[in-house]
Image 1: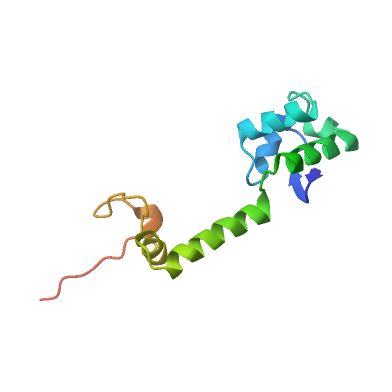
Image 2: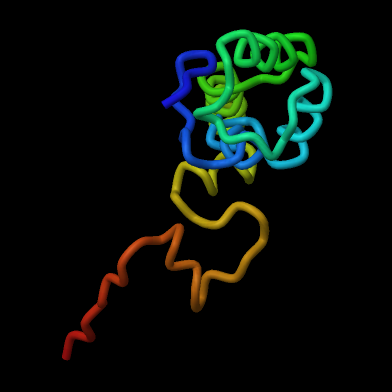
Length: 122
């Protein structure tokens, strides 16, 4: 597997499809990076030379794209800020409930987890 910034990307896929395996790079960003680096997007990742991998890494750095650890840290800091100031969004994050106004009477199982059945006492 090829490595860019310490992240392994699959060899058998096209480089345009392999770059989104890096957290923070999507399909459009990947095609922009390849265009800037002057690399054919149809080439397989395993066929890239070391020079081409370095060009891709330089294109990512020159665009100032936040990836992997830096990006995860940014999100974590933003989340911590919301929870520390006790705003509505922060409270919802703390309680593990949907943050963006979705209904919770039914559905919302992704955030709330498995159903907890509440029995009725006589």
